[in-house]
Image (tube, rainbow, N blue to C red; front, side, top):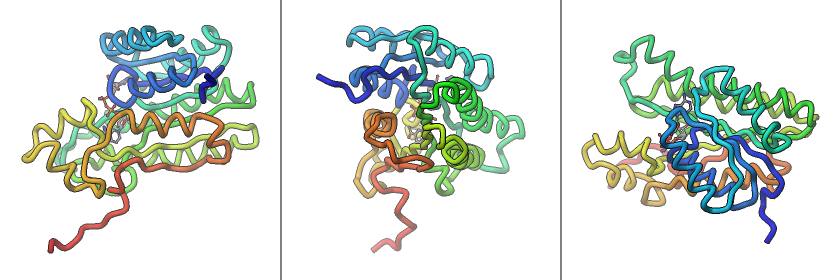
Length: 258
Ligand SMILES: NC(=O)c1ccc[n+]([C@@H]2O[C@H](COP(=O)([O-])OP(=O)(O)OC[C@H]3O[C@@H](n4cnc5c(N)ncnc54)[C@H](O)[C@@H]3O)[C@@H](O)[C@H]2O)c1
């Protein structure tokens, strides 16, 4: 059977959990060779084992994607291990919800570094290889919090909004070289990252799921499906876009209760 990502080489960051892990498994099922990263070596190791058990070709590189060294090493590993770099998926990120006036300057800078600097560094490390090849796809995980304001996420939301425009700039500047760039905006997905927060709130995950027009939280696998589409030739004329995968939560405004 022909995979939708056969003969492609993909880097995925934050692949030790949640969306990154689910994407690693789907990309491998579709035939991609993988270079996977996470800052947590144990989570990364678990993902590597699962991909190998499913018959995937994979190389692991733990490290912090807020550094240039790690992003350059990921792009280089794709070339050295598998002969090229077709897809660089800047997925690592996360939020620690804090009201704006309780967010210290250091915490603000941490959230910007983790959610925006990491994408700048990943995209520019990838572009060093992709501009030589004259082909490639850059993907980034933004968030519904980058499309509209979410309570407790001002710094994270600013970073994720920046990610959307950064992908547009890559699409604009490098399109003539055959390089595409897109952002995926997950809504509330039931990953370990989100559940750790929702479990602390009254009503927990169920209360949040009930606010979504489709009536439930999403899954990491549902983001992975969108990432396969955007990474594959099926989306060859899609670039500079942001794709919400969120049960329609981005399309709603506050509604009077009847
Ligand atoms: N789950 C959601 O509801 C949701 C919604 C919108 C956006 N997102 C975004 O999706 C992406 C993945 O989140 P998730 O829900 O799978 O969370 P997760 O916490 O389950 O997974 C995130 C992974 O990133 C890794 N990571 C954190 N900092 C890192 C760093 N500096 N370098 C390398 N790896 C690092 C973590 O160790 C973890 O394995 C993030 O960018 C997040 O902001 C998630």
